[in-house]
Image 1 (cartoon, rainbow, N blue to C red):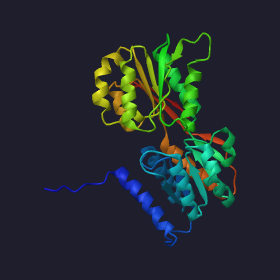
Image 2: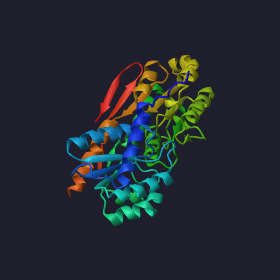
Image 3: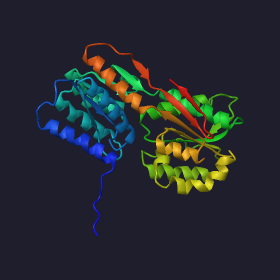
Image 4: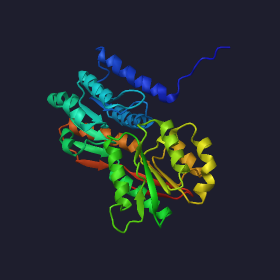
Length: 328
């Protein structure tokens, strides 16, 4: 018997987004009188960007506007993102929001055309780096430096005497992750003479958004008796399919707190793993609110209004055993 493959909800959303762009680029009739905005993701395969888009889309439609999601599929790459920006300019959007992968490359390529066209720009999730913030009107999303500090403070709460730590990250050029790492180092006071924390010499370890590689890296660190704390500034290892099977043998070690394990992100799957005691802390980002903030900022700019240079979305700490704190 031949079984017909069914499309997952995530894949369906991604396909729909790409299909909308394709139809619009062929010169299809306008679907409404409202404004058109574009969200440029690092990758439309990343469910967090789909969550941001869906929240923005709902709010846009309630106000008679349209918003589309564009970006490459699979592993994020700055050249693909740059090409997507170039392509979406053909639609002449009323505003563009982007989660930045490589500030310098965008500035030297597609964003020359963005500026020439006078299209208002908002960054979200990942901002332009310091020398390039003039390319956007404002940033909305997580305070990534503060997120890193909160990860560090949770590590200090769990291990008050300090220890040797390692950081897991995604892409080494992602500005949001760079800021989170800076926050971790600040929160652990690694530059202080009296600090009780030392960093593993190979840290931070990048997985370049490969979930399985991140899980491999995590297991190596769990096996290393010289590592006391593992801090991941993203969700990668927890999104690998084998996380439960491969990390469950280390649960007695985690229960004893001889090793502590902390993650940025608190997607439903991550919270399930936390409830199983397969890590100690998740710090959640509110992607739905981020999406609504993206639309509101773009709408204001399209009306000729100013927006704040930065506007931060809420953060929530999830702990095992379950205690939560919110930072709005």
